[in-house]
Length: 247
Figure 1 (cartoon, rainbow, N blue to C red):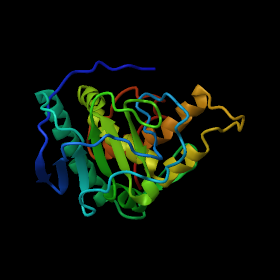
Figure 2 (figure 1 turned 90 degrees about the vertical axis):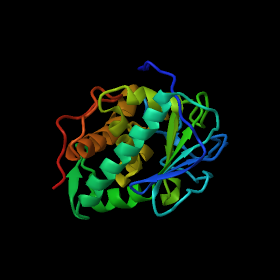
Figure 3 (figure 1 turned 135 degrees about the horizontal axis):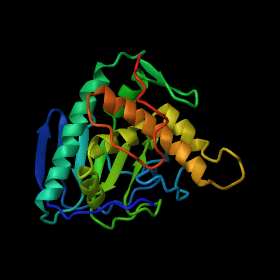
């Protein structure tokens, strides 16, 4: 597995800050104990947690009309943590503007033949909320990093704060992180996820896992490139090739 250098950081929770339609909430608690999650592909390491979504069990979003970023702990934190959360907000705002600019019929065709449409992206992304958890929070996938939950159409993405900070230290890392999770939660991503055992032998090989991650990576690559962002190099599973363009 690819390990990133983790840097301690700081984040002051408490109160609500709304910027560009993004609500940031410090609720002074939360144990991150959500059910029905699948791995968001932090390092491409399959851990058996893929189930194409799940039944939910996540905390309700703070505002169904916005993309929420909720901090689930109350300790005082470092400036690097605050910078990571702030940059996540910036990435969300930038990618939201680009996704909203796509027509419903705009599409890319992935190498596996699956089609991703503007309508699918807008519907899924507009309902997505984020939860930021303390270092060491474990998830059903046993990653202690983060997971994404399609949550029956009301998606929730969770990251541990150290992972968020690690990606913030990578060129293009924050844009990639958010769009990779969106890629997993599109119809194409969920279809790939549910068919990850391509050989139907009851196990998932590294090659099968990488192929599944590339679906989300290729979607993320297209979105980040389309929005004018920096495409992160060498994600787990890699990219299929040059960025696809929505037509």
